Each structure stands twice: as C-alpha cells, then as structure tokens.
Length: 247
Image 1 (cartoon, rainbow, N blue to C red):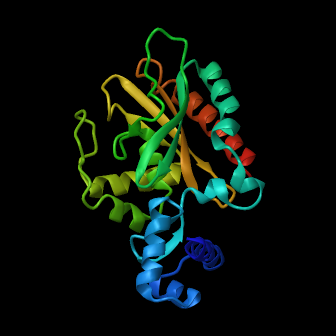
Image 2: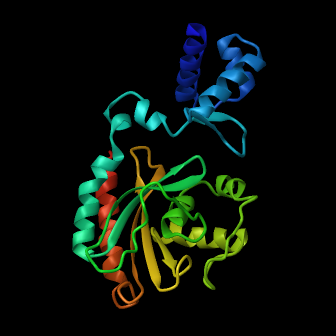
Image 3: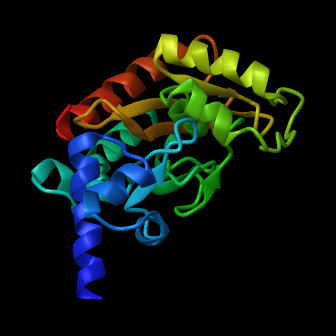
C-alpha cells in the first residue's frame, strides 16, 4: 500500500511538471509496466485527482488538486471567498444570486443567496444545472476548449424545456462562441418561461474557468431596459471574485 501511495504521489508530480502525459510515458517515468500505471491512474481518476483529456487521451491533474496542492492559491476556499460578493450583489439587485462549479462534466450549485422578494427563483445548493439551457452551465462551457465541449456533449440529450431551449450541438457551439466573445451568458427563458438568468465566468489564478456566478429573476425585472445594469453589476462582481482568487 505504501508503494502504491508513493507511486500515486509521483504521478501527481509528473503531471504537475509536464502538464499532461499518457499511460506509456507515466509507466516509463515510474519504471513500471503499463497495466500497473493504468491501475494507479484509474484510482487517482476515481478520486478526481486526475482527469483524461477527451481529445488527446492524456492524463492531467484533476479538479480536487485545486484544494490539495501547494501554496495559498490552491488552498483557497472559493465558496468562502465568494460569499461576501454574492451577498452584496443580491442586496444591490434584489435578485437571487448563486455560485456554480464544474466538476466531472456537471455544473453544480455550490452556494446561493436568496432574494427577499416574495417569489423564489433560486436553485438549491447541490443541484445539477442544465449544461445547454442554464446561463451558469453555458457560461462555464463557453470558456472550455471547444474540442472538450464537443466530446463532453457528443452523446448529450438536449432536453427541451421551453420553445426557446437550444436543441442541438451545432446551435449550442455557435451560442457558446457568442458568450465567449461578450463575456457573459443569458438564459432567455430557455429553462423556465418567465424567468431570465445571467451568468459570468470566475477565473482562477491560471486563467481557467471552473466556476460561474449567476443571477435569476423574473422577466419583468430582468428586461431590455434594465439588462445593462444587471450585466454591469454581474461582471464587476465576477471580476472582483476572480481577483480575490489570485487572477
């Protein structure tokens, strides 16, 4: 067991140094056969310490390394860091605000601040968000490599929630390009009629996006005449969170 742990830690060091590596390369570095290297990688992948690039099939460091790596930046509690900004944005706009994270191909709500309005449009913490119809899901996908997104969604079911829902990969990829260009995403009644949502990316110190900041409100509030105000406040808040995370 000690030997396996030692080899597992060596694999993490190899990936940190190289960025990515295949099974054969890792086996050579460890001086073990490919089957042994593959078993070690499977265990690390199970615990989300490594992940596989869908295009190159090479391994790279996984999502959990954000919390377990060396240095303050890798140990930052993103939720605790973002929470004051969520509260301030909710108070400023009087709309529900939520923080979402991308992990293993799914976008989850990890924190939220509910509006004091009589309606409740906030998602529950722990809930998985739609990748193709939610603003927070589309926002994160937009800042991922297109090849990775295409691979992730190759067998994806485009559930139709409303007449405005995007229903195919081609249209979604075009939409993601627009999001990437403008710097924010809109769910224009694509998930629920009468509800409009906005989302902006949160960048980590490496310039990667694994989190998005979202606002949800009725279309009577988030409308053409108020949209610029909402977007401006959202982008400024996501920028401040990104700066706090070391961007």
